[in-house]
Image (cartoon, rainbow, N blue to C red; front, side):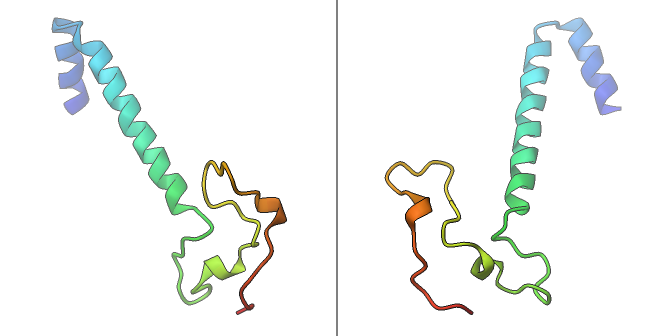
Length: 82
């Protein structure tokens, strides 16, 4: 019903077609970004089997998208193993 109304409006006002396109593109991008964040190695969904998943990550794991000054390959683990 909502899509039918949107199509009817787009037929009457063709200038709305780019707005619908970019609005759907933005909502899709936001959805996929949230899915990507939810599947990260530092996120836990089941606290009984793995309560602290961040402790199992390698010390050379790069948490950021871009690390300008940090060379993660040469990092050494400073803390104890849990």
